Amino acid sequence: MFVIISLGQNYHSQEVLNLLKNIPDMSWTPAIPERFKGMSYDSIINLFSQNINSHNSQKVMFRTTEDLPASFSWLTQKPDCLEVRDQGACGSCWAMSAVGSFSDNRCITGKDSQRIRYSEQYEISCDYVNRGCNGGSLSDDMNFLKRTGLPTDDCVSYKSGSDGLKHNCPNICDDGTEITKSEKLISYVNVCQNEESIMAALTVGTIQTSFAVYTDFNYYCGGIYQHKYGSLVGGHAVIIVGYGEENGIKYWDARNSWGTSWGEKGYFRISRGNNECDFESECYLQTV
Image (cartoon, rainbow, N blue to C red; front, side, top):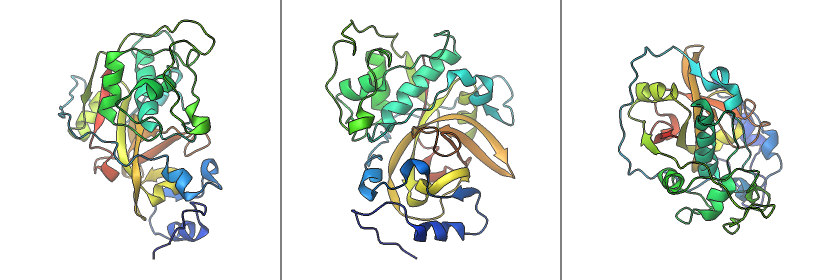
């Protein structure tokens, strides 16, 4: 069964939802998310990049001297170091995931005494290698963080989510004061050598990754996502925060940038160990 979508109509349809609800042995719950109700096809498509992976970074095998636990999550280890953001109308997942992991890991490692919300807007507006609200590359965004630190969101607040525009690179804070930046990112490494490598790296900090989004992911409302239906929509970047297993299905726990009303309070789980939707192809652990 194929559903033809007109660019002017709503993205979600009862026809597709009914199809998903009738697929046997589903490990996740399909519904029309509140976050996207009434949004047009092209408005949702604009949230995804058509070329988010760089595919030019060498993968390394990340190892730890400790035995890996059966499950692990920063949501339980250091919940105050994590925060869900909403990218709004801007295709800025590349910046949300890079800056979000930077904020997480500076808190997790104690570089910051508490989580500081660093400015995604500064990277969107000032990183001229990437494409603002039209997407970006995972390795390019972290090269930007290596070249320059970041001001806080209090200094340069997030504006692109409201209008979908990149905005000019600021030379002063929103309130007219001088911009003060954090320390630069020290380094980053692609730990997507295999499942064990990613698990080991997660015990050090949160990890930025990307994956291929298909039609059915935009109907996800909870559970362990496995691609069941639909065509490729585009690429998306998120943050892996943990891993576990439920009802015999291994999963990654990931943080999205679509607000807390989406998914599992802003998070989602996706099948682990089988490179579901290229989720285990390119992922970066930052050294902050």
